[in-house]
Length: 287
Image (cartoon, rainbow, N blue to C red; front, side):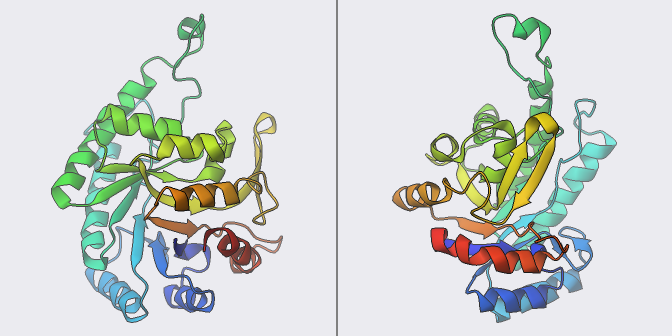
């Protein structure tokens, strides 16, 4: 398995994060924020410095992860001001990907409508009619840009977004006829909110060429109380699913990167402390 970390979960000081990666033998760097700047907003000189640091330290970039299309709603249409802002950011991130050698660029999807399809009466009374279909032309231009640029996009299964499960991720890819250019960035902890079990259900949806990248953390969700708690890895509701997931990924020949997402802290607000408490468990399953 190719193992890495989302760097700013340890520190926005990239050099420090690389030192920590060396300490725990993690190879692949996923970039989201470096310093106080989100990928896509760094200057050419800053990108060169980032590239030099990572290449000198032997840390290939696995993915550039900007929150492209996040925060959009059903009120947005292709070409409006917000959509244009996101498309421009996507192009800047792709330019950065070419410099740092990142094979993947992350996108998100607009804000979630809870019930997208229904039957037995729900199709009349409960469905957010047209919400899914209105999203497709917002994402479609990104597919064209990625094809022209020779990069692969990965859509994250995100909390509060239209794609919040591997089922909806696969459906987006199929509906856009984008298999190969768009893949799923599987975050099984995020999928807990919509009650898609990571294994076997989530894995089965994403296999067969749909899976491009993985984020790992552990959580405890309480949907009725609208409450999410990030847990020390192995102490949340994914504890008994990590090993079956890892075994299936190995058996299926998964060749992508698994990034540890360091969003747990042990009560002191220090996410590096949380990283250090979780990383051995992460490696025990996926190394």
